Figure 1 (tube, rainbow, N blue to C red):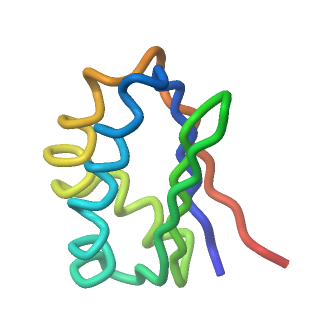
Figure 2: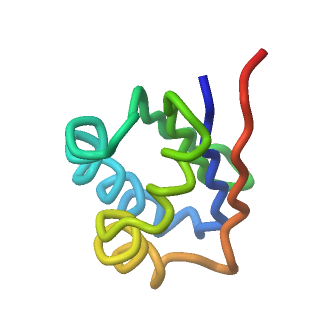
Length: 93
């Protein structure tokens, strides 16, 4: 499995809004994005992390260029971000 990991610094007061964005687009991600396998949200003391599972790194990279990601998810999360997110793609062993 290939994972797209997006880690974001979001103030604790804005985390409920970030979680709402995750919930709003989770089903669309799982049903509309080519190769999508899973999507998980982790809310930690220091940050918020979303991990997306894919069947290939090409599909993970394609999602980062998709309208769903850029026109919907990023647009809604951008006002909540304290700095640029850390975006990584990796493969599980």
